[in-house]
Structure formats: structure tokens, C-alpha cells
Length: 77
Image 1 (cartoon, rainbow, N blue to C red):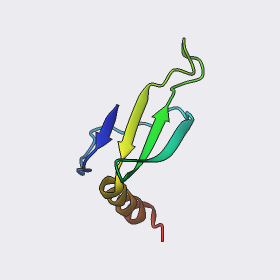
Image 2 (cartoon, rainbow, N blue to C red):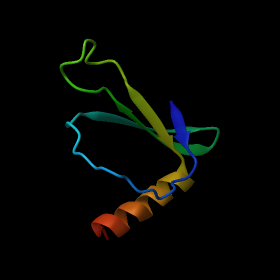
Image 3 (cartoon, one colour):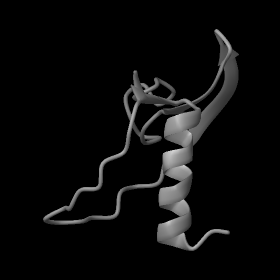
Image 4 (cartoon, helix red, strand yellow):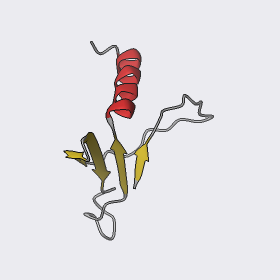
């Protein structure tokens, strides 16, 4: 599990489209801080398909950074 502190722009040498998966998100407050947690479970054909494979947390600062990135890249308003 990781709590993202900041987003840094990078470049990829080769980009590929990944297989689609489902994600579960949780919103909660801890010690007065609002947090968003996103868990992914990987592909349906895994040996343990419901086992969480990645878990990330965003606080208000990192969520704001991601919101700005999404608005700029996808043109969200």
C-alpha cells in the first residue's frame, strides 16, 4: 500500500493498453484528514481473483494534484 504524496510528470518509451479491471474505492477520515483509497484486484483469471493487488491512498493535496492533471489532459471542467 502507498499514500501518494505528489505526482511527477514522466515520459514512456513505449505505451501499451492494459487489460481492463475493476477497482473499489473507499472514502474516510482519519485523524481529521480526508482520504481516498483505491484498491485493484487484477484480472478475473488470476489464481486468486479477489485478492487486492494494488492499493493507493490520496489525501486532499495529492487528490487536488490528480484532479488538475485529469482536467488538463482530458479537458474536464
